[in-house]
Length: 549
Image (tube, rainbow, N blue to C red; front, side, top):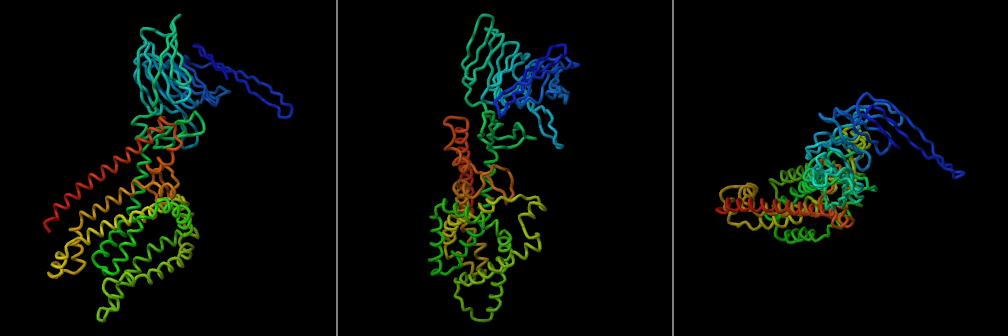
């Protein structure tokens, strides 16, 4: 397709359509030409990559959009207070670049509205040259471009990064026109009979603070967003290197894992160290600690291939267990205590956990038996469908619930072992003195033993958090690895560690993608460094506070 316009307002397009006959192999070209006259002075012209739109700039700073081939006016967009002096399509044919007489380059592209129509929107402005733009050169392999001003100033920009990479002056040459090589590593400037060549070293223009950490308005998106999408099938792809959803996914996975692990690990550690009989403790403590030796790849394998499908199939059963088992065990314990308040308890002190095993099994079986009736009664026979249709909550098979349980299971031994040692290491004289003054065993545990052991307990929590933040294989295998920013318990995430493991083997060495993956590793290191430093400071303050005890 060819499009042309003169300053009087006459616009003409000529298009050729190729038609092939599959039976004879004959190829014919059908040519079509149309023209129209517009009521403004045309100072810039560009055709979209799909040949659906013709863009015309005028001397008042407006961009007009016409349909092709009908040449019917569709939209007028106010772009600048000064006239449009140069226009060109960015790589991919979606974004329109319009330079004005003040040296500002404007990027526009169609955005889908609420009613489904696509409106041309002004997305961002690029300042820096201070004189009318006379030539715009888009790169052929990246979303960058070069602008030449009337004062022979060159500006190198990148659209996604939203920044001016660098600028330089060609005032000595005074070029009439410039041309950019396909790899954007060389630029030719023509001035009369003189030809100048400029070597360009602009390796990573798409990397900026805004592109890594802030919302960016990408092509074909209805609004700015945090997106990680590092590759695609075409060279026209706009790379999306936002680290924000990866950091969010790391925090989300660690938070749900700690939410699962902390109550079980700390309560188990306190009971094992303070109430459990020494004979039973000799079996329980090593048994839990040996869980830390389980390879995380095995836990991730089980979580992804067995636990995730089981949760999807028995989601109501799982929530029924959570609602039925804790109150049921408390009710059984209270009834046992009341019944044997005036009688001799047949279970020796410290062996009570074994007594809870049979009722726990019965409660789990009861939860499984009640699951289907409750699902039919409350959720119309399918909880996942109800969540999607009625509550508006999407459900993925490999989600944060699965990761929280699997990764929490891996973190529990670490927290339990350190916290149990801290509680067990509290001098017996403290607890004996508290009991001698009339405190109950639970009062002694809460107000004497746990505060004294708090530095060790806090260290256990921080080490467990570090383990959860840096975990790779469980998150890699038990989630969909979708870099979304949503606290929804039933959706997945992508963490920094898992992203490095997934994409590092296929990234091009020394590319922007490759370097950003190393940056992600540095961010992960700094996160754990800051958390561990803060944890050490808090631990020292707790030690100073309770050392007098």
